[in-house]
Each structure stands twice: as structure tokens, then as C-alpha cells.
Image 1 (tube, rainbow, N blue to C red):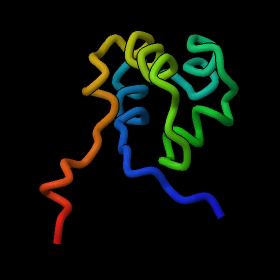
Image 2: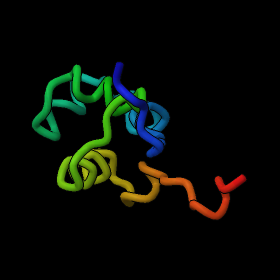
Image 3: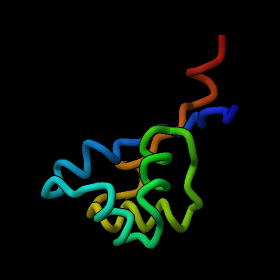
Image 4: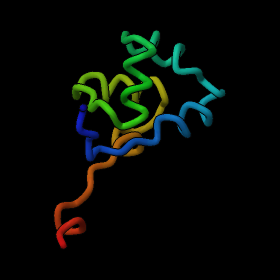
Length: 77
């Protein structure tokens, strides 16, 4: 079983805000498969830094508009 990543993302919302871009279109623009985009979007896979930047560029936004990582101080019990 694959452990979900703690990195969250807004890819789906950003795709729809960007002329309703499909997963296949995003995958083609960033040079990965549609299955990879699905896994990233669903939080089952964290992209490499290079792919993360490619996603942000393809969507016309900053990297931290796409991906978020929880602050350890906010998640501590």
C-alpha cells in the first residue's frame, strides 16, 4: 500500500480555472503520462521539483499556488 503524501495541491481547481485544461493536456505540456498527473492530483505521488515547476508554469501560477506542505508546528499535537 502506498502511503499518501503530506503535500497537498490545487491542480484540479487550477486546471479548470485555466480554460478547463484536461489531465491529458496538462500531462502533454509537462512531459509525463496522464496517470502521473492523476496520481499527483490525488495526492498519491509527490512530483520531483522539476515536474512541480513545470506544472506551475503550465498553469501560469507560482509553485506555492499549486502545492502546499503543512507547517510542522501546525500539525503537532
